[in-house]
Image 1 (tube, rainbow, N blue to C red):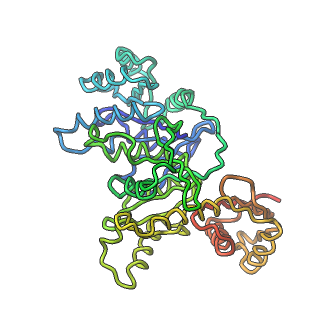
Image 2: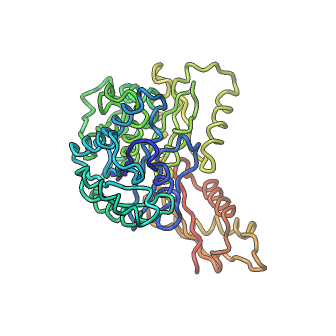
Image 3: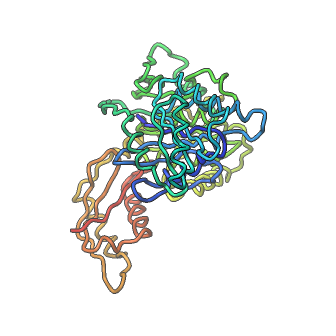
Length: 433
């Protein structure tokens, strides 16, 4: 299950700076995925070998003044419900404001672990000023400067103590999560799949707080569907519908084997969808892209090709992903979505015998060896697949440090061309022989 760290607080206390530091600094923390900055409110991060998702709530606040504070309050409530740990950011230079007080009282009522993060401590003289934040009644305070990064190590040491270690449960059935932005048809496709024969389907309340696991067993298919669509009445979440759905989606995504990303044919693939795609890829999940509402598009014989091309450009470099065009309303190709997800599940679990790998790949490498660097030649002797949840390959050679990114891409493309890994992320390593 995903551990989610949400950064909350009023505007201009430095939430985004801390978010950027957690998701982009190179020391102990992995990178964020590219996307349009204003759409990039969640990224992955890592501290002492624990991976987690960081959410910057600031980016989700609508910019009009009247609803500004309402939106912040709403986000805090969503964070209390959905996040594992909440970082409540305040600003030492302004002290406690009314809005800080209000946020603190919401957090005190919640049951989630909260770290009070006092930001903008650029010199030791401000340490005394920081002590006033103890009066918020939320326990220990953590003084940091998100600009320079000082203090973030101690903060993260505390954060990871609260992570939930969920024992890995062996589930024999594949798990598929249908995710996407609001109103793309997630509920409709689930209803189309299970609506007729409700008795065959048993919704099982999942371990992840309250995502619904639906056991689907008909037409020869047997799998678990993780339903993120209808999990809570969204009436309370008018302003932050996007923020709310992202929180839920991340949890479902982490739990699934294959992620079915639904997009709206009329709106096309948007930045938020691209983020979800890269999050799935980073978590080594199988991916299927489903274009819904295809009945609303005027078509000629080139429409599908053009549409596919646009999607593949946006999700590059991992473009070997099946794209299914459906109309849930018209019940067109709904089962095709499940068949494709099954295929991707098999591709992700595919094991290639070592003899076959070497037989196919070594001649290709001989024909197109890695470019020489400083007069030194990389010689690849032997290839094997490493055990893992998704396809991983080790190429043993004399000088792995000389193999550059373009050659990694070339090798991945050759693996995809010769063995069917469509929809599955493939990892390639060069190792010292």
